Image (cartoon, rainbow, N blue to C red; front, side, top):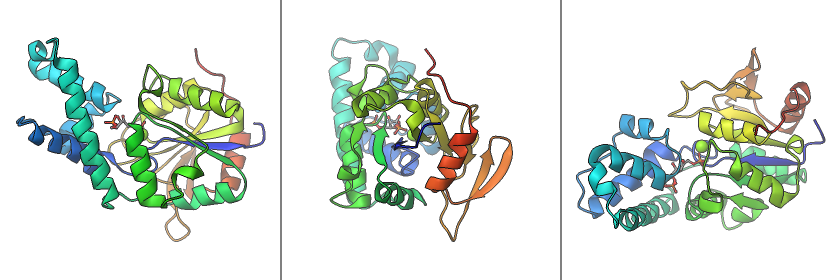
Length: 261
Ligand code: XBP
Ligand code: MG
C-alpha cells in the first residue's frame, strides 16, 4: 500500500442513512404530486434498492407494473419530471435538517482534512442531493471539504460499474492504492473493488444482511469514542473507532487490489 493520500466516500447509506427516511419519502411525495396511487413502503423500497440510480429504479418499477405505459414515446419525459419533483422534495427534506451524518463520519472527515488527506465523493445520487446533504450537515464549507465530487450521471453506467470511482481517481490523478473507499452496499463495494480500491463497508438499514466479499473491513459504522463500531476486519472480530491510523494499518495488511476489467 502506498502512502494513504485520499479517502473516497459513497453518500447514501455511508455518509448518512438517507434511503428509508429520505429518498423513499421523496419518491412517495412525487408520486402523490403526480396523482399516482404508487407508494413505496419500507420493504418494497428495500427490494428496489437493488437498482441503483433513482431514475433507473423508477423505470424498473414502472415497467414491472405497467410495461405498456412505460414503453410509450413520452415515458422518458414523464419519468424525468417525476424524478425532478422527487429531487426537489428530497433536497427540501434534507435542507430542513431531516437527515444527520452517521456516527463517526464528521470525526473522520475532519481528522483526514486536518492531516492533509484529500477527500472525494463517488455516488450514484443526483449532485443536488449531495450539495443539500453536505450543506445541511457540514455547513456552508461542507462542499469545499471535498476536492472532487463524482455523482449521478457523470458516468454512463452506475454502480456496481466502477465508472464513478475511476472518474474520481482520474480527476484527482491518484492511483487506487493511494486511497481507501467507504461504502454501505454490495453494489457500492463491487464498484469500488472494480476500480481497484481497498474498501471499508459500514452496513446500514437496508444492507446489514448483504455479503461483502473483498471488503477491507465490514462494520456497523465508523464508531465514536463513547460508542465504538463493531464488525470484522478480514476474519477477525473488531470493535473501536475508525481513524487514520486504523485505516493505514488495515490497508498495509491487505493485498493490493488490481482493478477488475
Ligand atoms: C444510492 C442510489 C441513489 C439514491 C437515490 O446512491 O442508488 O440512486 O438511492 O438518489 P449511493 P437519486 O449509495 O451511490 O450514494 O434519486 O438522485 O438517484
Ligand atoms: Mg450507498
